[in-house]
Image 1: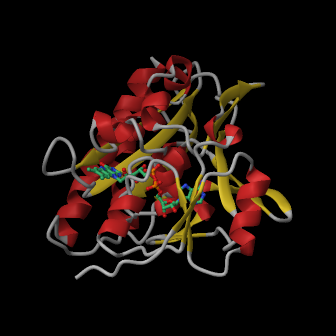
Image 2: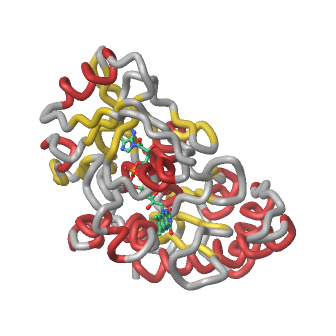
Length: 290
Ligand SMILES: Cc1cc2nc3c(=O)[nH]c(=O)nc-3n(C[C@H](O)[C@H](O)[C@H](O)COP(=O)(O)OP(=O)(O)OC[C@H]3O[C@@H](n4cnc5c(N)ncnc54)[C@H](O)[C@@H]3O)c2cc1C
């Protein structure tokens, strides 16, 4: 029989109020954005908070703005709001690829990219694309604000670099370089509503003469957290993207994957498939630049 316990719910209007609630609560505190992870965890008794702080009524958490070329996406901005932002989609199509894959339309109407990041699942779909785009997490705490690259924000399955009295405020994207684009692709046995067996986020910048000037590659679902694959980026930079370069790129991606065997796929299968998905994601990003 389920234990019935008293749980407090608060919906502060400011970041300062949210932080003071967290700092002054002796019990287990959880933040609530869309709730598509948290409520499922509470229902299955994986999470059992004494205090739930709803962040959706904090104005800054819902801000989605571009200033001097830098996008700030508030932690509670929903997936559908991101998908429907045409300019953001044209600047960071890879991120939108990732967000589009989060559950159904109904889920995306609630779910936030911030929640996807803070839940820190190794298979989270928006994280490799955020990493590939060079995005940073903006964190607020009692001592002010700090920024950390998304790849450093995630520490492991369900673990982030947030201290117990800190909250994710927003995700910031750098100024998009000319002649650059990105993509995120995943493999799942079903086409929708499934968890990534492998995922690849990539961003590339090309010169007018077809040389790769910059690249960032991140792989998901093949380690305890999304990884940055520097060797794969190095395989591209300074080169025209020929078949030989692509083969080298694929081999570097495969060499960095360290997946586990589980019901969704074996180690060998995941290593094989991540190369295929990485090649497709690279071609998709290059096509988008053209
Ligand atoms: C049917 C279904 C299908 C799904 N499919 C996918 C999928 O295909 N791919 C995928 O990646 N995910 C999927 N998910 C998981 C989930 O929808 C996503 O992870 C979603 O982005 C979570 O966002 P949220 O706003 O609902 O987070 P919430 O559930 O509100 O929060 C998630 C976690 O982050 C914490 N948190 C939230 N906001 C903050 C903050 N600002 N600061 C600090 N901590 C915070 C919460 O306390 C909680 O621990 C699916 C979920 C369901 C129910």
